[in-house]
Image 1 (tube, protein in one colour):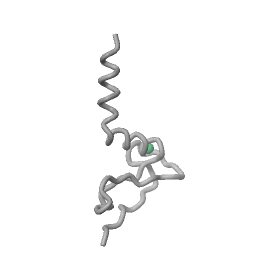
Image 2 (image 1 turned 45 degrees about the horizontal axis):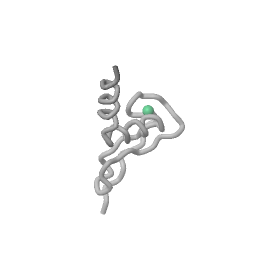
Image 3 (image 1 turned 90 degrees about the horizontal axis):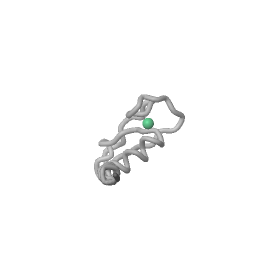
Image 4 (image 1 turned 180 degrees about the vertical axis):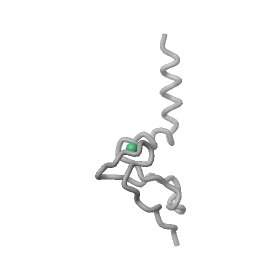
Length: 65
Ligand SMILES: [Zn+2]
């Protein structure tokens, strides 16, 4: 049996903003208690960080002269 998601707070975990919609970001379907409730913007951001896009962006940025 899978563990439950963490309890939903009133605010986004990343920038403490109260929003109507929060998405649950998790990275292991077998351990759903390991996750964060995030607003849409932060959910997209977290997905891109997980996909290593931050380092790709920084590499590209540093390569332009
Ligand atoms: Zn957020």
